[in-house]
Length: 460
Image 1 (cartoon, helix red, strand yellow):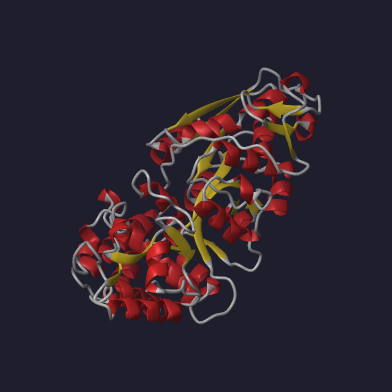
Image 2 (cartoon, one colour):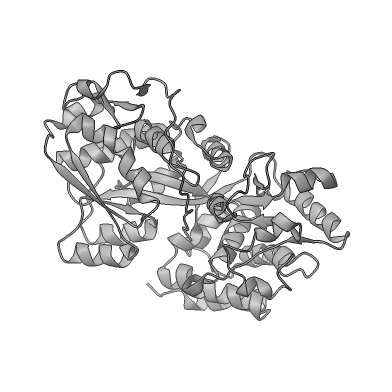
């Protein structure tokens, strides 16, 4: 599930963005539609090259509306990141965030009131909207940016039936294990590089009488989603990316033996009473523990490790130092039985357009550029990252975000989108959540859990 961090700090850092993004010096006085100067964010040192937007013509006085699920407090950095583009082009970007985005976007599209651009967090929803005929293909300028700056797997998630519609925007990395660097150092523990090393470390910690892991999957109506991330991460590592794709697309049964093996591997941690649930209770307490609270026992030494995404950094109490030498940090969830980079599970948003007006296409182009990624990094606090390889990692304010960006930019790392966001809603946000919760809370057998999800898969 695509959950987002709640970072509240906003900063603007100058520097080091290469040719495309230059330091302020051109100034707002040099900006104009077609002027080729730099668009500058008011009160900052953020300037972009205006030249790429000249080919869209005179855009002075045009407006472009954006509709998104990204709301306060995360909306302001987005709004701030459009200022240089607005200065360049004369376009007024009108931003609207809604907590009812998924439902209301469909209603607006069906009623002929679609926004110019929507940030869509699920490729499945993108495909549904494309099926209505309302989404227009991305312009050539956007496709060129995506080909240059993103791994091809990201482009595939914005493509429907061979047509490219939506460029990636932000991203989150889910394949992380949170821990206390100081506690590890004091105990003499090393960060595991393989799954076997991680299990050996877990056994070593358990032998001292401590619980190596803490976890929680309670999330109100969405209870169960953290368990889907565990399963997806292990399928990707144990069965490989091709089998992962087949499973997500239901080209193999949901209860295929390789998926059964993967869930049993997860159970080797989450259902092991010697491993969990440090500071929180027994195995069953995982089902009732709020996901946002589940990692907190690391701070008092009640548990040692917690698997959760990069956005979990927003859940640590105020004053917690998140860094390699701080109170908490994260390491990549290791690979299973393979050398090389660990696979990366993640999520993100995609920019879909509902018209092909030049102003709309110009904003699409900006949002797909390295310029925008770097501006956004500089006006955002912790909790935002992009898989755009044109992003200068040093512009990210959080060490965890920098770690996530390094994973996204590693040419040897395999990336796959969150599987439950790709599955039909009645599975990925329904039966799978319910059955994995039963697997924990009621010790429902693995085979039966996966068979019941298989039986719930829609016929068409």
